[in-house]
Length: 447
Image (cartoon, rainbow, N blue to C red; front, side, top):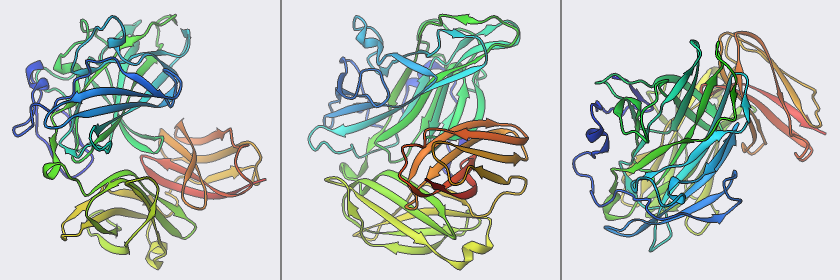
């Protein structure tokens, strides 16, 4: 059994059969299992391209009607061939979202990984607000593939973020490979690579299924794609699309249909000798105020500040920020932040915990050039270990303007960040991030 958790909340489920993978925990509203039986309509953006948004009507009809919006958030070395197999002769499984994804290259002649980032958000048809649900379970089915020679492969991939628990099969043993954590597009991802053994059709076999469980969340962000390793095999010419499948369900409704706060974003970044904590809400009901809590050991949290109100950003949500100028920050290498949201009746809920590195990690020193810059930056640093790094360009308000993922090796590394010519002249911060933690910051100037 493999269990990986992103919070202290634990789940000890073992998947042993396709029947169990389809079942929901006790207390789940059995009517609230989304069905994607209709053909989705394109509501914004260009079809199958990054930024495209599709709408599924009547995915849930009891106890109230909900629709779902699917957005192609990001495209990286892959392409969406079809948003859902149901577009093709009304085929597929009613309960599943089934996109078709292929590599963006016509020939794979070297190691290559491609991923599509999707978001799925459920809305109340009556209010057009995000549906107040909890206990959502996301299941990624049929993560398989094939071998390429004796040392290479083509594996389907799946990545999840902000999950309470992640579950893979134990009996029979999972065929999924835990490929570790990495950061991209502002998320800390847990990534899994599929089997190198094909399973027939769109399989529900538990050994090639990944289940992620969530608390209060009307929206889920996930990635689907591939990992190709040539090994001693041949090039892969004209790779065709592969069928992916996911199910969303097993949720219940919060407090009879009301949820105090739904978050669109939550982030914390180093800004000179302070930390800027910022968050945006999508919906607020009976919210009194927020407390920003800080810890230096991820166990003992104290209140760093209180935020009573924010600025309206849409009809139902607001934008907030808090600048932590505590002198204690100068004495610590790392700080941890979370939000405590207080209702008007005194009840409190907590967000996930964010980690911010306040001092450069030993073994990693970053140099940035040219500085000032015009169109690109070169970041040079020594890394104590191999892994995945993310480079962010951040403005003085703590907003991430550009993000680039890079694979680094132990020792000296150089990463070039292009596409900066569109930035307004002024001062910015270049951040080096590893495993979700800011390792180093350098101020840079755009001419």
